[in-house]
Image (cartoon, rainbow, N blue to C red; front, side):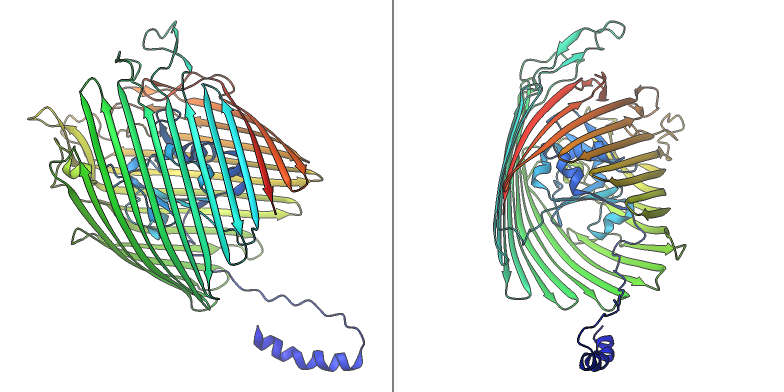
Length: 634
């Protein structure tokens, strides 16, 4: 760019000597942006969609707007995800780059992640998860907090009242300038969750109407962020996320349990300190943090009152360097130390995890983009299988944004601490789950004036060996995990996005479809009826559609989600029927000076569908939500 400017500078100078005014010809200098995940499937939830789900949790956002299946036991109850047919432990969840999956069960509860505490959500499908961490045989989810450096003062209050005595209060204060920013967000939420349902356990033909009991929850939290520009090249930031979660665990409707039989309390605190140093086209980032998690489980029937405490230290340093307009390289080093004190283990346990990664992104030309990444991990002093990945993106037509993508990768997942040490039943001899995955597809984008259109089609294949499965021990009465399965997961994902601006109206429409076949290919015996059958609780078909219209200060939103049948037995002899949910949202903005009031009214499960995601765990029928949001900013 400087070279071009140097060439034209003498001519500009001569022209200014001859003419009083100049009409300069606009010269565009195009620079190709390095695509760090070219060839892989990464989906980012846009800010408008996030705003629509601001009072809800991450499980509700994902299940309503993506084809990812969310296995939920109900509002405020445990919610986990299944990417491309694999289990909840095969989904890695990262908060600002730090893995927050508990090392005990190896998963995260998405009902405990308020959307209000999240600025950006990205879903990494399949091998794309290796860009962040290993273990995501199905994928990973990244939640980020962003610093608004242009903010001077922003005050926000949000109050929601919903069906079943559900109340949520949110408040946020952001203050700062171009060098320092502070953001504080708080949450108070509670619900009795005493909804009506049809008890099909009593009668399928004439099920009686009953009220859900022992399903209340309480959730309080605070997220504090501080960011400081250190000199001209550095940014120092700190984040603290503390939250308490208490919920009753309702029994399934087949069981007649005592009132308040099961309760779960989970409190956590996560603290991070980060430093980013910018030097030309390079960025060096260092991060260190402490994660504390306390869980207490009580069960009156079994006389259980168990405490579990996990303290983790996480440390990382990474370097990203853009060598040229065509070449980008990166490297990272991570180390985590976990200490677990559990009444369900014979003794306290420690797990040390370290990883080293290196990758490059290379633009061969304007049409070919290559990705290569290798990650090596060490767990408790032992080398794990290396996880290389390769991706390519090819622009088929020069004049059109029509591209082909392909990737191939190896991945692994280490047994969780519960798999290894749970007493009774843990199996310290378990091997790592290992897998190979591949995907290919097409993406077409088109813009015609105010109309934007994007469509995608992806096919994926995954082969996972040594799949860990818990089953009853042949000698003892308890369950134990074994490396029993070889799971082949294949499928298709399709998506459409359309946006149109006409006058004072804005339209947007999204469609997502996923077909997933996840089958066990390793029979446990000659008479194994599960051989070649779909894994339990993996729907073959999921569909989601979202339509939104904004006109002046009014908005109307509609969403539809279809979840296909899920088998509940490994031989596929029993299943949960498919269901379709419809939701409506109405919104109105009112501007008064620098203040903005937003009023929203939502109807969930519009048709009053009687359904269950998990067998014998009823879900609410038609329900409502009303919220008022106040925002002042300058």
